[in-house]
Amino acid sequence: MEKLEQLYEGKAKKVFKTDNPNEFIIEYKDDATAFNGEKKGSIVGKGVINNKMTELVFNMLEEKGIPTHFIKLLSDSEQLVKAVTIFPLEVIIRNTAAGSVCKRLGLEEGLKLKTPIFEFCYKNDAFGDPMINDSHIIAMELATADEIETIRDMTYKINDILKPYFFEKGINLIDFKIEFGKTNDGQIVLADEISPDTCRFWDVKTNEKLDKDRFRRDLGNVEGAYVEMLKRVQS
Ligand code: C5P
Image 1 (spheres, protein in one colour):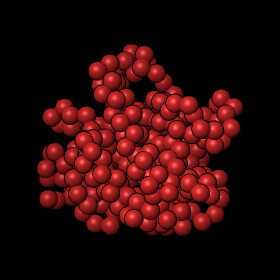
Image 2 (cartoon, protein in one colour):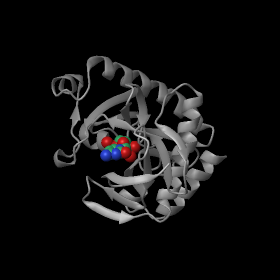
Image 3 (tube, protein in one colour):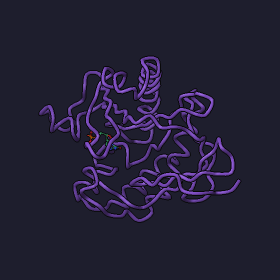
Image 4 (tube, protein in one colour):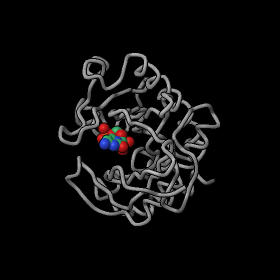
């Protein structure tokens, strides 16, 4: 399998074509951005950690019946995935209030939500990834009603698997963002990554933040938090 031209460069990853039309290579970068690109920096070792953590979590999810784009690791910072067309949607689940929901609705950070909150955002940097609902998605032809139903069902299932998985490792899964893609043969699969860049992870005992909020909010020991999270997932 040969790595061919770059298809896309995002804030944290690059995607390359391969000589197989059904497979892409994803390269994870150390670059970090926050607040829709307003804050830029680098987290040493992040690419390697997020690549490895995504491998472990996606393999676990596959074993539990969630189809994903992941095929195999190729190197410390590269993985082979199924070629997919990404739905331009950020799919968010919140178990505990933190981040933008606190600003938007005046909820106190750390408030345990009676039921998980499910949100769709339109993945579009120029408009700051605004929150949208099913009606926008269908009207704008971002996905069909059936595809929305599949994505919503899979997302709740993923939350039901991830919450106890991380809790066993001493981590409260506060919230997370995932993305979905469609393979060349039309299957909807979990794509992108699951890592401290895309989830909020709090230590069960101390509530210490072990995720990208350390970078966003200048809390210090950013690299240490990523290293600790990989250790927990490997345990
Ligand atoms: O910022 P907000 O509170 O809306 O983020 C909710 C969750 O989605 C957090 O875990 C955050 O890391 C993740 N997220 C993301 N990429 C974005 C926006 C949010 O991974 N562009």
